[in-house]
Structures are given as C-alpha cells and as structure tokens.
Image (cartoon, rainbow, N blue to C red; front, side, top):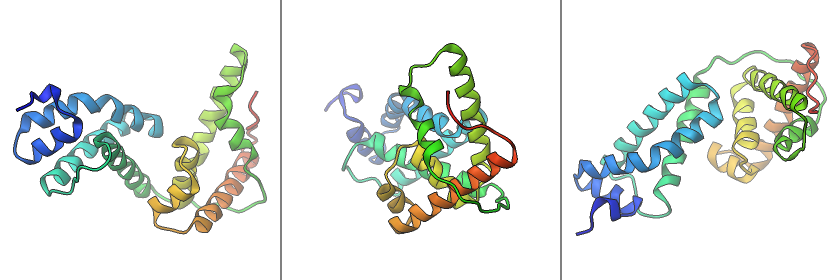
Amino acid sequence: MKKLSQMTDEELALEYVEGNNNAFDELLARTQSAVYSYIIYIVHNKEIADDIFQETFLKAIQKLKMNCYVKKGKFSAWLIRIAHNTIMDSYRRQKAKHLVDNEGDEQFIMQMSDMQNAETSREDLMTNAQILKDVQLLIDYLPETQRDIVKMRYYQNLSFKEIAELTGVSINTSLGRMRYALINLRRIAKENRLQLQLA
C-alpha cells in the first residue's frame, strides 16, 4: 500500500472516506494554503476569511462522510467549489440595501480588471489601490444578486456561462443583473463624488 505522502489528493479523499483520519490531515496540509488564498482574495477581510475557511472544511468533511465526493476532476477544484458556495452563502446573509437606477456602462470596471497589466508610477499605484478599495465598498451596497455577479465576474474571472450555472439562472438573466449592478455602481459613485477612472 502507498504511503499517504505518495497518494494523490483524490486517493487521499477516498482513503479518508474509508476511515483513515490521517489521510484528511495530509489533504488539509496540502490544500489549506490554496483554499485560504482563494477565500481572502475574494472577501478581503481576514476575520470573515477565517470563518469561511473553517466552514469550507467542515462542509468538505460532511460531504466526504456522506459519500458525496466522487473521484472525478481534481480534489482541490472540488474544495474551491465548496469555498465559493460558502462565500456566496455568506454574502446572501448580509442585509440588502435600497438603490436607485441610472444609465451607465461596464467600462470603468473593465479598467479595474486590467490594472495589473498597466505600467504605473508609485503614485498611480496608490491612487488605483484607493479606487479599488472604494469600488469594493460600493459593491457591498448592491442587492445580493447584483453583488454576487460582480464578484464572480470581476474578482473570480468567471464567464457569464459559469455564473449562470453557479447561480441557476439563464445567461441573459446574468447579463441583466450585471447591467443593473453597473448602473447602480455608477450611480453610487456619482452620488458620493468618487472618481473611478484608474491612473
């Protein structure tokens, strides 16, 4: 029989299902850094990330014990999917806030996603960092369906097809929600006199 250190993640998962608790310890050691990095990248809050991280692994343990894991695809992708769903559940628990609609487009958020590719001065980087921080705060004011889609699209780089599958709606509904999210973000930025043009 292979040593645990020589097993793949998928083999370790199945070994744990068979009752070997040491297999899960090995899995945790291998995957915890990547899972936590993914969570903190999305939520930008250490306290929330810690809670979601713990909840993710508790859910993974429950699913493994219920034989809900099937050896297809990578175990790490399965874990990230659980983390993603846990993040979405956390967002849904937040209080929805009232918004007004206005005309707008996707351009200013597209610029944000391209920031990493831009050559900028130290001062520009500081300005851009503040803009992205402001945008993150603005996103929290969106209704949950709009907030979810913005985070999935621009912070997780998911396609509208993937978003539609994850949220259980059509691609057209996903596109519509994104449109209203951008309208609301532009309106909030205007009301708060925030400039969202990256340097």
